[in-house]
Structures are given as structure tokens and as C-alpha cells.
Image (tube, rainbow, N blue to C red; front, side, top):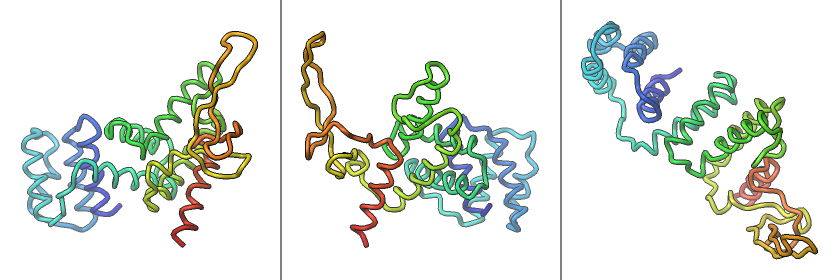
Length: 232
């Protein structure tokens, strides 16, 4: 792990969860192991029984010694950390359970930002699968394939972020009839029993009801490939 990655992890922990200042001591030890040196780093690495206030002082002094850029907003920290976590999971540098738990913290800290909402939806579906053997968002997800499914979501997440795909594009569904990405519309239908009138989702282009939701991995891949083609 690089100095930048170690430090980003500390910033992210401070943003995402109740922060334990002992992590600052561990950070200093790991930075020293990378070959960086300063008086403040050495002091911080030895503060196992010090107060949070004292650890904080030496941490920020160490940051100054290392000339690290700390002018980042909370949103930037979350965004950079999410990409780091996903890429590490893809490279198998961290296990998928840990990566998923961190992404769920990111979902909450970002106030359910559209970039990360898919991980919340997966978590909801896993609960539904455990208790009612059904899903709300991801019909392809099962308890048996959950790790592979989450890993694929990580790969899709990285690609969408690197392509800077806008939320209105990510929101599109896929019509299996006209083979287009579409903004779905509601359509009234009638039957001879209650409720006599009900609504269904339909393609905004051809009106077909044969749609794949935007949470579907195949649809996300279609969105990615379309943008790559347009940019190419």
C-alpha cells in the first residue's frame, strides 16, 4: 500500500465511521515501514497509550512533514476511497466481504448518492433472500452467487465512474422489443377483477412491457458499451 492509499484510508475512516484514534498510531507505523521518516512520525508511532488529542497533533504535524495534499472535500474523499476499495477488491487485494461492508458505509455517508446506491440495493436483496427467498431489485442475485455478483458490481462501478456516466444515463432501462435504452413510462391496463385498472412499466419508445430494469448487470453493460462507442 502506498503512502497516499494509507492516508486516504485514514481520511475515509474519519468521514465514514466513529473514528478510533489508535488507527493514527498504526498509520504512523506503516508509513515508517514504507521508508518515510520524521520526528513527528516516530513520536506518533509510539503513542499507544496517549490521548486522542495528542495523537491528532502529531498526526497533522506528520502530514505537514510529508507535504501531503489534504485539501479535499468530504465528497472527494468518499469518491476516491470508493474507487480505491472497488479496485482493490477487483485485484483481490482485499476480500469481497470487507469491500462490500466499506461500500455500505460509503452509501450511508454519501446520503445514498446515486453512484453507490446499487450496493444498498444488493444489501436489501440479500436480506429479502434470507427471509423470503425473493428480491426487490436484482433478480439475478442469489445467496449462492452473492460474492460473484458483488464483485461484478464493483467492476461495473469502476467503469461507470471512470467513464463519468451521468445519473440520467444510468437510470435508463432496456427494452427487449425495440432493443433500445429507454426512460420507462407507466401505462394503464384493465382487467375483469379488482383492481379493474392498474399500471405497468412500459418502454418510452415503443410501449412494450418487456423491459429489463436499470439494476440489471446486462443493462449496465449496455449503457457502458454505448457510451464507449459514442466517445470512441
